[in-house]
Length: 590
Image (tube, rainbow, N blue to C red; front, side, top):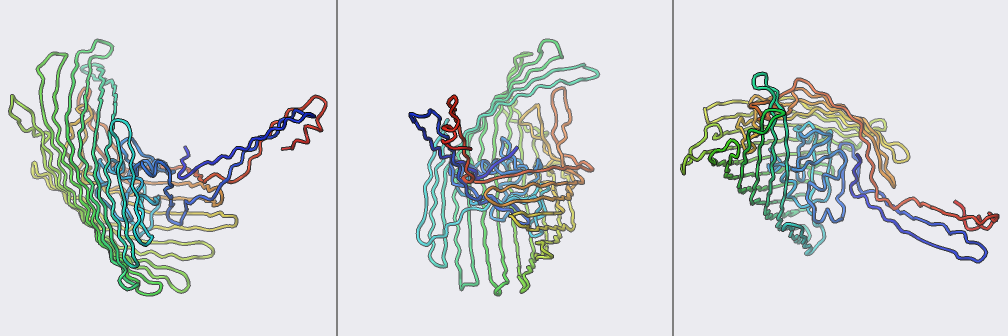
């Protein structure tokens, strides 16, 4: 399936008709389609897609924009895949953020306004200067920057069904070396979802059983956001900057779960309903400091320190009723708590030599601390009794130290980008309930090679090979069993190993009035992370991640995009008078 970003078709229809006495031949119908080149670019190590000024970019979300980019798919929960690989690292202005981690990462993409996005970089084979995590690749979301001197700003307002609305505004002030920006927003989102599940289980003792589940869910969230940034060029060679963003998510989440089961091909012998009333309160914050210095005419140093916070507090009350066999209703509660802090420090040095070659060197420190606190209880009378199968506390901490070197030059007509990255990861886990410690350590070298050769007529040949790693996140390692859906349980696995990936790409790209290209790729994984469903009851399954020894994936992509306003199309209809072809021919030929 092809996808287009920024493609717009403008049709100008010119109609003419001649009612001459000598002939009744119809004049031609002319359709003129004009075009201009696309703003999208194919660079040696990434593809860049500019977000256009359309209705979606003004009032949609980041998930809406990503869903229109080739090779990218976005599911109903906002989770992103590149070439059907969901292990994707998402960056904001080149920096990581806790808001995109774990199972709720897609939800964050559904809450970021598309109006804040300037362009999106897709790196299926990232260079050594980018973190090695994510077998699917890296998506870098570049936000808009106000560059005009003086005050600039805009206000946005839109509304929809069921109380949906988006309200936001931006204000920037730039004066010489000083630049600043401030934005606020308020979004209310309502999501209705209906899920149906039907399954048959063959049991050698009990025989075949049939079950069906229906979940009708409504989620209403109010999302206020605030964002600010400031930078100052000290003396022409030094620039300091600071940024801050804060987003809250608060709302209600209700669902009705209806379950039916019984022996296959016979009457239903079990009917039950589960009613849920829940409330969510989540907080996401990013704070950053930057320092950029020009050390010489072709030499630079950049330092950055980023702190990212993610806090989740969810509370659910459940009422269970039993119609068949008849039983008294029961009640239980579930509380989910998460505190996640990520600190990222990066130092990057670049020097361009007189012959045109460039060397990049850098160091990264990524430090994460995760605290999971989950509590479940059953009501006995009016007394809540903790459920040990649901209640637990889990801790995860890791440190990734990384260094890289990258060399860019032109060799025999080929652009070359060769790099080598080294990463050392030290991770420790602790399941406080039961006092069970663990570790998940790894280290290795991650080479990258990108080649690009330009030919006449706007043609480019590209070849890439990279090695990547996908480390299981804290949520995937947490052995806590999630009972929100009693028929489909989920749990982490503290025995998971990192996934090791090699990716090979070869393709071509053509730039002109219409851009198009094709890429063939092959991906080889060791210890591939995959979801495994295990039956744990007559109609209950457990979804848990496991490592597969080896997996392979290959594909061929074709992509095209343009602002079609270019070639002229000339369509003609002619009615010939009997015996008078010369008169008809005089009206114009195709």
